[in-house]
Amino acid sequence: MPFIHDDFLLSTGTARRLYREFASNEPILDYHCHLSPRDIAENRHFKDLFEIWLSGDHYKWRAMRSNGVNERFCTGDASHFEKFQAWAATVPHTLRNPLYHWTHLELARHFGIDELLNESSAERVWCQANERLATVEGTTHEILRKFRVTALCTTDDPADDLNYHRAIAASGLATKVYPTFRPDKALCVHQPAPFNEWVDRLAKVSNVDVGNFGNFLDALRRRHEDFHAIGCRLSDHGLEYCYSDFCTEKEAAAIFEKARAGEAANSRDYARFAAFMMLFFGTLDAGKGWTKQLHLGALRNNNSRLLRELGPDTGFDSIGDFPQATALAAYLDRLEQENALPKTILYNLNPAENYVFATMIGNYQDGSIPGKIQFGSGWWFLDQKEGIEWQINALSSLGLLSRFIGMLTDSRSFMSYPRHEYFRRVLCNMLGRDVESGEIPYDDRLVGEMIRNICHRNASEYLALP
Image 1 (tube, helix red, strand yellow):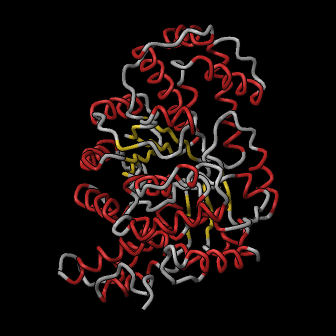
Image 2 (cartoon, one colour):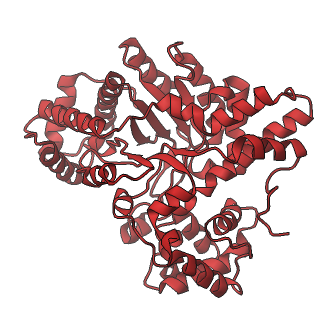
């Protein structure tokens, strides 16, 4: 029997039946990812397995470094095949790491390869996969069609021109592709040089002369409207924690003006400015009926030497231990007081905070729609079997699992779509065990419909994409 088989991760008969009847055929709505709009607009044809699978994958780089692989084979100048060989030699050492599951699930689903990847099989796997990639199967549009992706939302800076999104919208691609408004750089008054460069780009793309703080807010409003016009219905923020030391607009303007003059904000002024801006963005989202996403808890760029040498997003981030509850409550409550709390998804990176997040969402449900405030799926270091189970258990114990909007890839790779299958198998395995132990009823109408809803329908109805 191959490692990835029909019953993979499904430990009971009920789990297997639930997966096949209610989960396996549901389409995918990938409402948060980091795929390249350019790759989709140009229907990129990947040349080899390195291009589609290893390029930019810091999950794999971390494992390879831990296995003693030289940086030349991760981010350096080794050939594509040499880098793939180094990864293949690392794979057997990833047993019990989710990379072992993902690697073989992705090879099976994309290329029909059921051979275990290791040093001896590397060349065969490379050649077989590249043969498939040489056909239409190696294009972005075919991948989206194959995995039945109805819609996806990329992650986009307000200073992006959105031209690739316009090209996609005009292309007739069956998969709907929308931008997501990610204004993290708007907070960076503590780094005046890159901040001012970004503000100048924002001014150009918005056609607003940013001569003062009011103009800055106008430019952001203009871009928010531009994103909305092309179908955007979500924003996203990557923060260590929420900011709650709110200042007035006059105080925020003074901090902004100093940054524009080249003076870096100190830590207190940065936090106060960020708090003001996050209220501003919340109000914009609420006004347009958008969904706000808060990705909280990452401790980024810990290795300063390699950050200087390789740049960000190269595998040197970890889980942070920031206190979340008080500041998160203050932020959400302030928006609620101002009748400006949008639909919100909270993603937690530290599992020690799962119960904090699962209880926090209950404080701000207002009866307007089911699950207005969501405890988002396991994120980054928690998007593996154990992390998924922890998130589902916390949400089930303290909220309504039935209203959960389910899984997303949060990935830069078109190879990641089997992760939806992975999530669905984990979900059905948990519910199947509960049915067989008598903890939930043996009732397909009840349990099966909940599975279907979590896999696709809840997200579709909640997000209301155009």
